[in-house]
Image 1 (cartoon, rainbow, N blue to C red):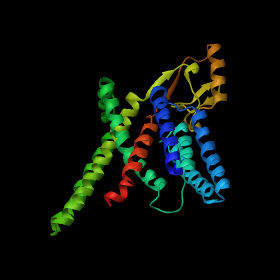
Image 2 (image 1 turned 90 degrees about the horizontal axis):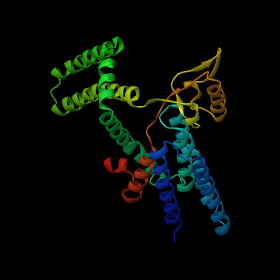
Image 3 (image 1 turned 90 degrees about the vertical axis):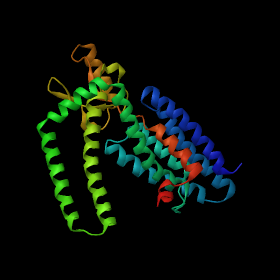
Length: 287
């Protein structure tokens, strides 16, 4: 069995398990993620030693480095959780990178951005429908906020001013492209509003310290007796902070913590991998 097919089967199995746990519990166990990283590098090292070809381990390390850079960028930007970031690193180690832009890893990463965006939007629409009463109430509140009203006026006025020059352009193709660009800018603004409302109405949840898991995103600073325990600047709560909150809970000094539940992103990795394996790089196909 070729190495690529063997690795592909392992990746598919791990992504299936990871997608199930992510959808069910909103987290992927570290044993799966770290196991994927170790297995990817380990198997590539064994293959390199057995075949006296060091390209296998070098490609694995390059894939790990590239995906680690991407994963931590997305993590610190607040787009992925810790489990998503670690899973991406493991996938990079397994798939590998051989510096050819037509490789599986490069196509996979491009597809993640395309499929991930569609997946995130679809999940957000699902949440809006599932929690439609809360969503509508928060939508009305958000639109009545002074900052939102001011931003809407600025965006709409800017769009009208940007369309005025089209009156003097005679080339219809240029006019169409510019009009679509302005339309995209306005749509992006309203999409941002939609995402913010989804976050405020569907993703915030009060939980007791006992139900916190490592990496949960804390919405507000938790301060007890003038001491800050945790907060949004931590980019995910640690096990030590959870232990301290449990102690404070037993002393009746705190009851619940407000957290933000993220979108389970591992299923989008699964879809992207299957699409890449079958069709290749969607971006290059579109271009």
